[in-house]
Image (cartoon, rainbow, N blue to C red; front, side, top):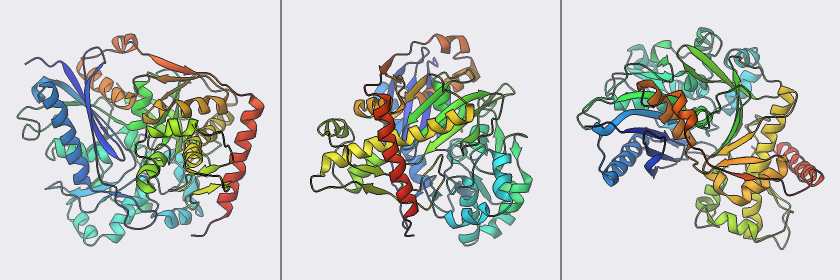
Length: 497
């Protein structure tokens, strides 16, 4: 059978997506399956790893059936994933020993505040490029070891595996043959030294996390990793690409040159700049991360993170039910000119440049005539305001203007949001009309590993975009942003937890 396609698995924080790409880098079809969000306590967020894997396999099954495609038609698999979510499972069975602790979970906030007061605060930043925050994997893994009965003894018996979501999916797809992660995901754990490109023994000792439970870090186009035939329809398929979701979007946007920038508007928002072979240290609490390692060469990135981006729209729909569909927000926002409401969606604290896990969400500026439209509009605008926070920090770090602003992600289809973003930034935005750049990056890497794609062919693939030009004055933009800054300051002062 001819192997005419690459399968990209895009495993996100609220859903899993299977995308089929052809030899021209075009989408043949895709399927998306949502899975449960588990909230055991306020500020805690968990996922059942079985739900995650089942949603992945269900999405693949549906897209295969709809297109009369089988595993035998797949040249290779690219995997991209929510990065910091932490899973531990039994080596022999692949069964989770506890729910996956989601990247949005804040249960280790107190532990992180304790670390910040110690010498390890600066040490962790220097070694890993990450600020100390519950967002990252280290304190989540530490929490599982300290709080789940029997885990310590099981670890001593060499029965436990730890990993991020990519590790777990690969373990399941290979029936336990491969316990690996890639360098981009490893760099998000707060345990990985991005300068030596290895797990850092000093940090492992500090967190009391044994090296024996860790996955092996591999390049983003790994060699000789294949699925188990029993899992993939009786055939063995090459897993040729592995990359964290935001680095995947950077690769999918073809940000291959130093200075190239992309912002992904997903559940959160993530602004990344390719910094080449230099691990640039931020003075404004941006993160330094591994973008990818291919053929022995490491590419680094500078990153800013917004915890709640598109997730605020999901909250409008599922949390308080004031919209029926996410797409309703665009028309609703255009229906009002009221600018009095400011929405701070700090459901999981605030990310870059604040890194404040204790602050909580708030809606300010309510008046008697505030209604559904004003709240929806302010929620969309909060995504844009938080992005300006990231861009401002990045400009300060590099000492000047940023490069061309490329955008992607589910929320980038919202015309109101993109226009407001261009207005606030006073920059032209280029929004890719094909917004699956995260899975596209994973597909590119998988195809590169087998020769299905080449760098030359990738650069020549057609890429269409929609441009947004600022429609307000710079003075108006500064005024609007100053109101946001005041609102953030007020909410950070008001901490009742």
